[in-house]
Image (cartoon, rainbow, N blue to C red; front, side, top):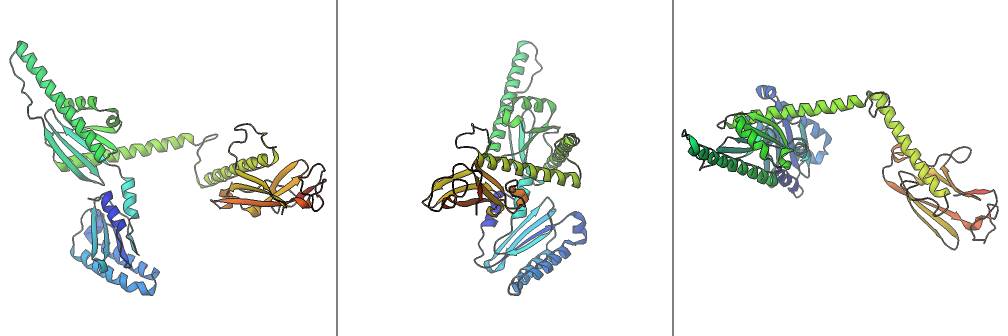
Length: 416
């Protein structure tokens, strides 16, 4: 049984310089009959040898030979195989899984557990409570197999009598009270199981009278996870319970896919929030990128043009981090704008304030900068443009040595 603890053990293994061979094979029934999974393994080894440096190929050949011999003599089990080997450190781990895996091989300093982590995240754990008025059996099903089981029963359940009158009524109430206590105990055990091994879905199985009463006792946390009530005998075997659970799992997945597909279809169309087809989807993504760029343009332009304190709370939306300070020789403006390269931005100091534009645009100012999605730079860049105050006169180009901020005049100086 694959557990998260087992995956963590694999991930923590230290080969101390020796590489680990990680092998994943699809063992679907047709491959088992022809034993063609061995051919798939050999093909994976050949492809890996071509990628490896010459110095590391002997190590892979040695590990692959040991795994190939094991595959030759061991009958396949399950529908997927995950195998990890590091012969220099005496390390060997094998997991036969009840679900299919994609063929994959890695020969690296650490075990490649990414496919196993994907399995743990993709599959949901189901809990099954098989009950009648006296007995209960609890199961958890994960990755296509039963991983845990427990059973208990109400030992002191009084039998019903055929006597009439008050005696029969009293016995009936006594009997119903014991059934209620028994089912309350089932709920308690389910809650304990969920705390110890959280499950995503819950199935109730058994005679209708017992499952109906149990369903009415479920607390909200468990009732929210209930996906099916299945008629079954309390004596049903493990294989029958597993198959019923897998059938419910398949139905739940299909219903979820249908609901998701239906929501997407509802959103497709004029004015909708979804598109269908490669062309319309790419067009929508590009439109979104342009919209985000326009938002950034407005933020930066409004920030640079508005006087300090002029904007009201929330008027500009999100405002980039800005630091303005003055030294003896210059005034420094620093703006942190996500995805904007400093070379893509020009700043203009004019009599009326400061304006920003895209660098290199013929004819002066254009929209300032490009959004990160268009530019291809996901990280924020620090924008650092220095304005030499001494170069500015009162009309926009002050005399040397005059360190005052420019006042009046229609001229403007491009910041370099």
